Length: 188
Image (cartoon, rainbow, N blue to C red; front, side):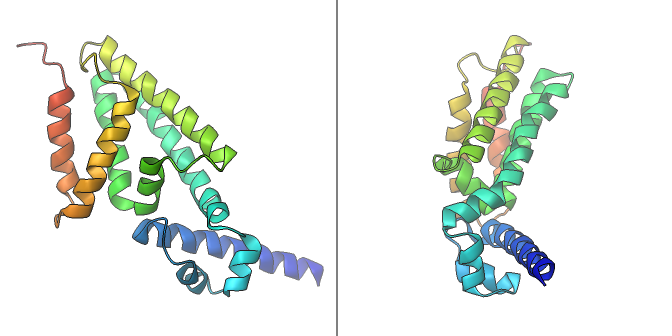
């Protein structure tokens, strides 16, 4: 009987994480916990037993997604052309913002301070982003005054584009304009 309870508990936990990932992606980090429990097919008591606080649930849901965020820089660094790697990095980052409201809010608000795992993943992602930036600058393709913190500014601005535009692809135009402003044109 104890094995069945553990299997049920594991199944409930997995269902809660899957439901939370979907609900946070659709509605952001302030999404209804009742909706998460409903979509998972469990009661609120089960949700709170598995994840006593919203922060606990957020940390569990986004730890895996933050690993993907870390991999963005790693992938960009494998691109032979440093500028193309930088463009691919920013494009994927903005695409994530456009498709996952919860992760977008987490990245823009830097809501990592209460979870060591997320804070460590963010630090690793930031080191990778810095390397992507320096590599594009060393190739003479990215403005010398661009710094990693500028990515946060761009993401905040992109969050505004996503919130205020009726066109769900408006972020692509915004990114194109940003990239034109960041690129060093060697032939001028």
